[in-house]
Length: 383
Ligand SMILES: NC(=O)c1ccc[n+]([C@@H]2O[C@H](COP(=O)([O-])OP(=O)(O)OC[C@H]3O[C@@H](n4cnc5c(N)ncnc54)[C@H](O)[C@@H]3O)[C@@H](O)[C@H]2O)c1
Image (cartoon, rainbow, N blue to C red; front, side, top):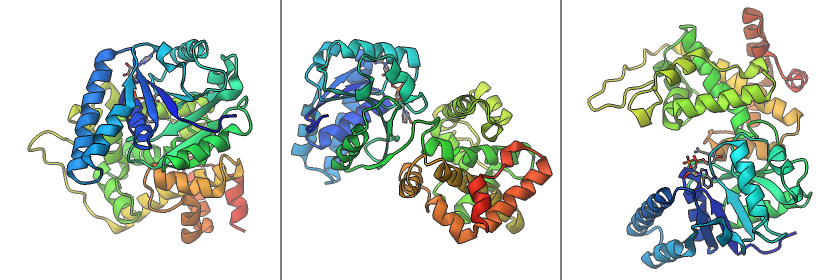
């Protein structure tokens, strides 16, 4: 297929679109940027200008480079401006019908060898490609937020994607100085699937009055070396956004109880306690707010850590069994996409798969719930 990518089209100038535009323009590519909301694009470009100026002031880039990056991004007022693009990455609202309509229109504008990609977090790549005339040129390119800072990019070929395309996009992402991994087209791809219990099991511990959010965050930071505990992370991501990803993954796995969402998270969303962006989530972010200090308890902290890490390692082992990605990519994804301190497969080995399996078995016996079922591979790894 394509051998050279010179002009990149980005649809959507929101959080992700402008970030991806910055990444491509920094690598010297010409970028066409389109959004239905012209005011949003104007705002996004102004913010980018400020960001680039700050980078120049900190001597991360020169002032000349800052200007060049900005000049490489051309705002298009219509999709028609994308006719010479070699690759178009869509980063618009997470709605399958709207995305499909945009791609169908795009197909009437771009040349036949232009690659079409979606940055979707949760919609199946295969389902998006199925509505197109040339589904073989369609692929998922999933950046993480903030796109200029997070190294990971999941490259997701759908069932109808040309076999060689994933490797081409992989090479392109490397040339953009990203850390690409290739993932199967399954709900949540790699990171959003494997990371579910980090939030889900933490929420459950609170719902069952076993520990407080402060204690859980403290335990995961101090015993696990995670940069952020589950609750501070949900507050940062947005409790509503996190809840919506959980609901999608749950529904898309045909309601597998492993991914069952939390009532507490639903109530938090209903109350608009979305976290930092609304000033209050699991923590209070208002001025002079005093959040309680965690009551330290060694045995409880160990229990919290083992329960959450065992669930995460079980997910990673199941992803390995299903060959969602190579072992190396599974390890890279969690470290480069969500800053986990170690790859989960290596972590399982370090703690001991037997211990992980026993922790899950005990939980299963206690609750009699499918949620704690072990990957068949984990059970084999114990022996
Ligand atoms: N925010 C994240 O953390 C994150 C991370 C990875 C992937 N994603 C995915 O990236 C995509 C964009 O997310 P976001 O957070 O940047 O959203 P956003 O709401 O910040 O931006 C979306 C933009 O798309 C524009 N838009 C809507 N319909 C359009 C259309 N028909 N044509 C052109 N523009 C249109 C909107 O005006 C808006 O500016 C989604 O698919 C999301 O799932 C988001």
